[in-house]
Length: 106
Image (cartoon, rainbow, N blue to C red):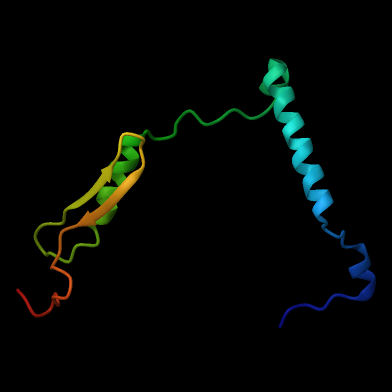
């Protein structure tokens, strides 16, 4: 059962309005522009990670994960088809054709 909120507590909850959201977005855009202009300000933010994996490792991981879907007891194969823009076009793995039951065939 969800907790009940007293009328006094309801009064303390700030109301979210569209205007406030647009104001926050506008402030974020201004801050981003300031960071582009002021290199010292941009250095004060936490930098991005440097130990992230590359595209090749990402796509190989996807293929390895897809291979784990295979029910073949001997060979598990996965593949990832990626275009030149690093967009995944397809993922797949070896298995029986659609409509064939894995339990009916050896």
